Amino acid sequence: MVYFKIFLNTIIFLISIVNLTHPNAAEHLFRSKGVTKVRRIRSDGGFDPLNAHGGVFRKLDLSKDELRLISEYHALTEYGKIIDLMESKILDSEDMRSKEKINLLKIIHKMRPPKSVKHLLTKNDKHKMKHHYHKQEIGQAMDIILRRLDEQDPSTRREIVDYFGLGKQDPKNKETRSTER
Image (cartoon, rainbow, N blue to C red):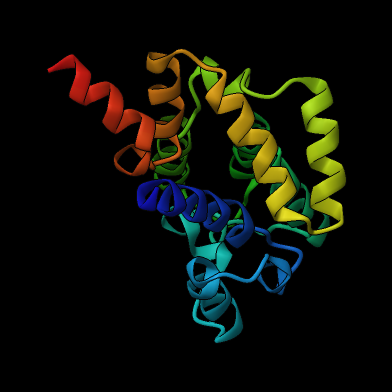
């Protein structure tokens, strides 16, 4: 149970913390001991979402609308759309040398999600997620993702959770690995 709480809080952390347009999004999360870290990071100004993923967002001249789009795509697990937007911004940038553009393109292409992540949510799920996202109801949005994760077979679930960088914290991953031994 402790691992599941860590897993859930980490997913909430990842989705809410990269929210580039709602600086106080974490303040709207339910109150529990597990989310105080998220609130503290948001409230003390120590976290800058533009520095996420090696600072790739900071290197580009992104408008407020583009930042809002990136935030929304991230919340809806539309990582491919983020990569496409970033790729076009890199290629159109006149402030970067060719070598820097090539390095950034390599970085974002390594971040491309597997098909299992792309197909995790249905159109209906994404519509509901968007609704919760705009109302800053992070917990309800996470319920949708967790429900879909629970519906996956163990190897697909492991692939998705590993892509999110949470493989070690997924309680079902631990159960599966212990039965495989």
